[in-house]
Amino acid sequence: MAAAAFLLSTIQARAITVDGTLDAGYGSALAIQGNPTGFGDSTVGDGTSGGGSELDAGYGTISGGNLYLFLAGNHESNGNHVNVFISGGAAGQSTLAVPTTATMQQMNGSKFSPGFQATFALDVNDFTGTNYVEEYTLTGVPAGGFVGSIPLSGGIGTGTPGVSTIGDNNKNAGGITGSSATSAQALSVGTGLELQIPLASIGWTGGSISVLADVNGGGDSFLSNQFLPGLPSGTGNLGNSGRFDFSGTAGQFFTVAVPEPSSIGLVVVGLLGALTIRRRKA
Image (cartoon, rainbow, N blue to C red; front, side, top):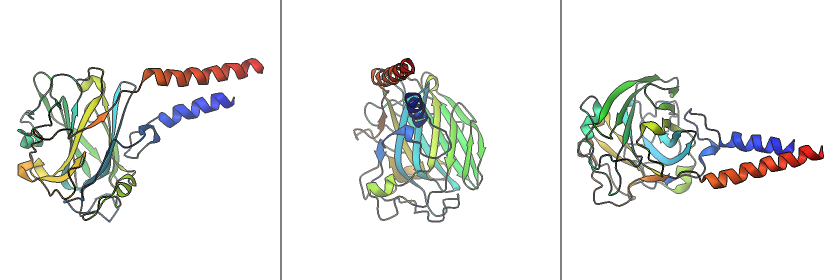
């Protein structure tokens, strides 16, 4: 019985609920912010993120046919955008060229780091308590645009307006500030924007997945200095009409590795073996 309980607790510990709150199943952070926010520091904690937007840390895992991402932080409810770009392994875009169907088109011409081929993009902006969502597939002929909205209550809400399930808890008032960005500050944040995206939708080819995230201004027209991975400490807001150029910057993305089936299998087999032995003794 003890082995069965341990197996159950292990499985439950790995489970993830998409609600904008960090779960133990994500493990350690894959990207940690080291650059103070140039978009202001929210201290209100009422779900509006009044006065500031930040990306504190990035987490990710691959499980059950889905990519799970957790971006700790907050985005102001004045229409600030969180942009997420995913490189799933298939042939994608080294220079962004989304369809001219919604606000992310303003970012067209942005250039990714060498080796990053964007295969999927997602855009979330909170405007006065509603998240508006855009999704784009970037393999083959690019397609996508606005897919729907998610109402927030006190800055919290979950929905699946497109292929992605999105959970948002926009109440963070801690973490990094406008003048300080330590690892301890960044890792102290356990709320933010959470995504569950089917692997079949992101051009996944079976290997590790690369991710780039940023905070952009209204209409995706003025980039902050909040990226994951973080830009060098002291880097100011990029602005630049909402476009970035990382073509000369190596590794401006973080990587979500595929869990090792052999390791998971050994743990499960060992637990089941212990359970069988106990049953025989009983």
